[in-house]
Length: 157
Length: 102
Image (cartoon, rainbow over all chains, first blue to last red):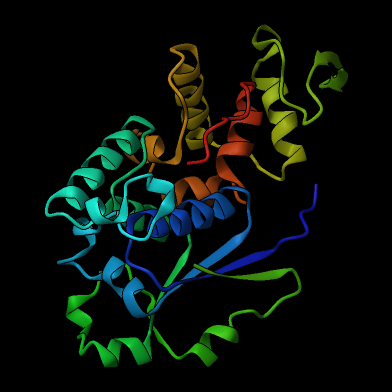
């Protein structure tokens, strides 16, 4: 059976754990269905591919109505860390891999991982700051050129 | 519904997954693999046996599980069953399609 979607391109611009997992689950889900997938990490999304930062991502407790925590409380010290801990625990129950392991799985599955050149320059990052699985650093134009076939979809997260 | 596989009438669902594992054998497996453009090798059988064992123990299948399986790594898994490895390998193994999103 053929599928209409042939390739999924994701742009991850945020560093919150829920956004990172949304991109990862969709990118991995695509590969599992025989659909090509690639992720372009830009702006705060770069936190997700920095060796020193990737295991310290947090869930957003402020300005996130889905958390059902009053904004003032969400900003108190420790609330974000606690909410993140709870969420990680729930994810572990579902056998969701931690960020670092998930990146390995994606890379091994043939999902291409790209850093955004502009954002890498802006945050003064060096290649050694970024994960070994990274396929390269691209401009947005380079990334658009990856949409090289019919049935390509691009998603901004 | 019924489907003729290897000259036998086999019970399958709409996607072709076997409904009765007791109807499965290597001949059935090879026919289904052929339809998926997969030629079975020793390594394929090893994976199929691993998946069946997991299924019989009622342990959910996931790509993370494959990584930890010690039987095969993810790269090889994609190479052996191109175009949706867990979907195809479970089809060939005669077990239900995994329901997990990961």
